[in-house]
Length: 268
Image 1 (cartoon, rainbow, N blue to C red):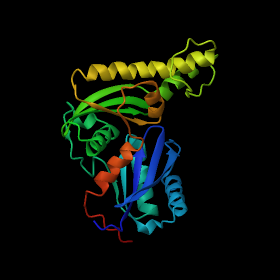
Image 2 (image 1 turned 90 degrees about the vertical axis):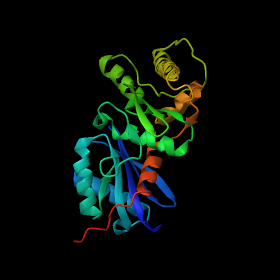
Image 3 (image 1 turned 120 degrees about the vertical axis):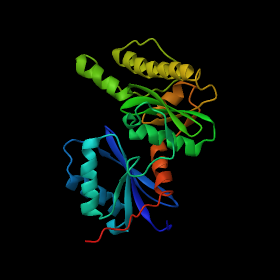
Image 4 (image 1 turned 120 degrees about the horizontal axis):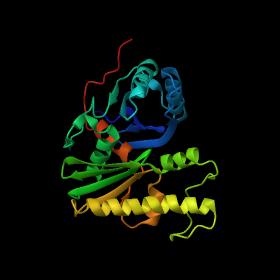
């Protein structure tokens, strides 16, 4: 692959679509779009085109879209947007670009692309034989890697989805910020403080408890945290060894520029 090629990397989640431009030298700034069920191929294509224009990149300079998606209804829309506005291939991980990671799930097809990609990205970044990747996304996931094998993991409620569920079921609960300016649990003297400390320290305790239990199986594991609430969790607990805010994008970067299918631009 030549160094002049430019790719668009997409992390398509249940709440947001994160994307950035990348070439063999590195990644550009990240942008976030909503994962809305009201999007169309045109709205997505126009939004991505606007981002490229802001970055000074013409659509015909983009060689490929490389995507990790856990939202199947968006996949066909993104593929159509790519074809109409950029005329280049839309390649999904791991469907179109297999990950060089042995998948030991009982039913390998059940593993979300984001979980496999997170495990692969962590493996490319850290040499430790055992890794636990914690992703604080719409769900909170724990994914375990030993050597070059994805072993499986755990799926738990997400921080924001838990708060949203509380809010929809309990009319008197106030909106909370999920921000914390200290490091000690207090007995809440208001509903807002009770919620804030309960959610943040509750998830910190879950993180500590589950990583401790997983380390009975993976005693040498390094714990890597990613996702929107990873920094808050890292401030409240010492069980996280490394923060990796762009972990999935780094995984996409690695597979994108170490994979060389025929991605020649389609002829119109």
